[in-house]
Length: 196
Image 1 (cartoon, rainbow, N blue to C red):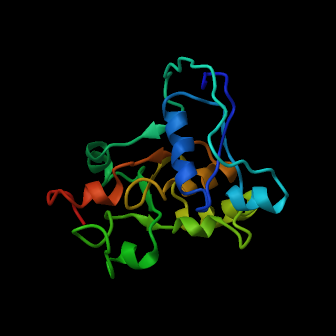
Image 2 (image 1 turned 60 degrees about the vertical axis):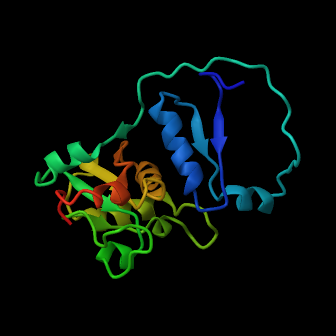
Image 3 (image 1 turned 120 degrees about the vertical axis):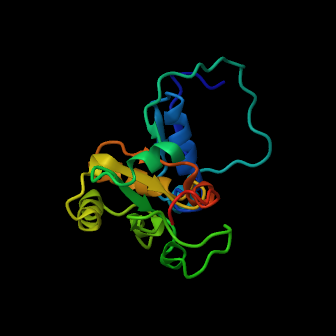
């Protein structure tokens, strides 16, 4: 039942972490009408939004045709080629200890991509689980980027999922779309030829 005209609203209970990846994937296949429910399921329940359980209502099958991407995907090879360029800024969404290489619970190598900046994705959210106001997000990203061109930002994390809330936050802050390195640290660190 999903068509090019369908307005998709995605949500989760994880701070726009997993639904953010779905938002990005739908944009990547050319779907423009997709939004993230700010605050997720918790916010919906807090305003008394209705919930259903059990099987969803059956919908008439349809054909969804992918279109030109509305977001940018960067590969490891592209990132490696641009790594020493002053126009590239990598923003890593992992927690500080993983970024600094103090702990690495998932991947075989600890550390980060050389030159990357660290902004854990949870810093985009207020105590209520909603994204911070756009002006506050903009001020925080301006401080993080310290003069780097926001249009040249590539987001990454461990596996390309928790980087998306940073990408969403930059759009909310009024920056244009930025790129995602979906392979992220898990892909990057598996090739010893890539610098760490």
